[in-house]
Length: 86
Image (tube, rainbow, N blue to C red):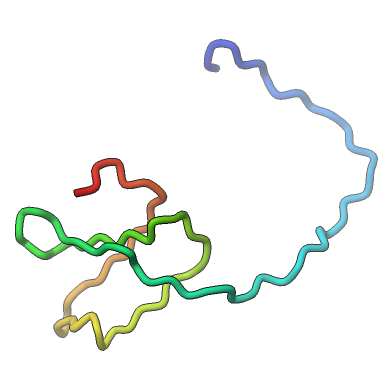
């Protein structure tokens, strides 16, 4: 256990658990990347898209614009912070 931490306590809960009454999740806005770039080695094998803000939601791709070749692999990874932007 890290220094300064204490073990978790076990407690008895005598209340009633209930479903949280939250509004339905709905579509708000579609964002386009603010900046797109590839690795500086010129390989054009990895691309980065910066939306200039933290985003919650899902990704929608236009595969016609991607111009992928047959058998080519597309891997998507999401991150909140770029520690070394170009």
